[in-house]
Image 1 (cartoon, rainbow, N blue to C red):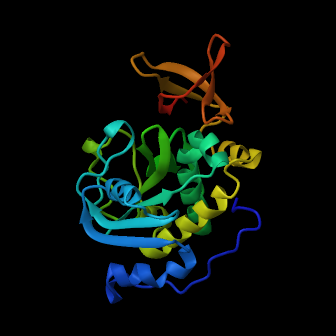
Image 2 (tube, rainbow, N blue to C red; image 1 turned 120 degrees about the horizontal axis):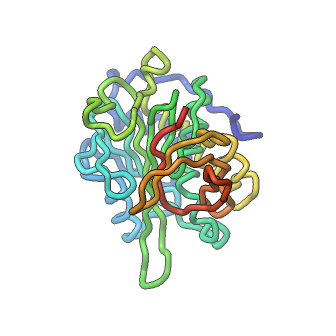
Length: 277
């Protein structure tokens, strides 16, 4: 479901081959309402660029976009491939309010919900794979990485980075995947304007950030949670996988699960390996 009351972006899609990525992104800036932005043809990591910019004073809602990444990463330092011309790789700088800092654990879900909202606008039903992935038809279409900039013991800024498989060529060969992946173009069976999609994701992020500290945000997380009330294989760090039933996401971003013996507990770290049919 699109965020209630959220205005709908209505723009004329631009064909990327008619202008440079810099010009195409610039044409959507009024839709994104970002405070500042930087575009790079190639970077190591947009998160690294955004973190450095944050340390130099980048404002809230500053945006870093790259056409390609050579050292992109996901959770636990895993490599995230971003080939030129076929994926989205971007990061946003957030200067958090006290209420947002108190709900820091929700930020990965914020990134996921922003992407899900944009995909719904394309007519695609996506879901949130706890803790930081977005799935289409059970395959990964995007991932979120949240990192922070600190000054002594004070949180200066947070960077939320997203990587999204947009078109053919964005999904690595099957033998290189830890989890099945898909791109949006394949799901839609038609081309996708990357920069329009970027604008729609940022738009969704802005709407969901408005309710980050509210109960409605947790309700949305559970509405889109992958495999809710279903049995999956789940692995906690340093332990063997076990079969659990997903109960939901708690207010502090933990995953609530139930074991086959009937015991229930909440986890802050771990990985859903796959669904058990």
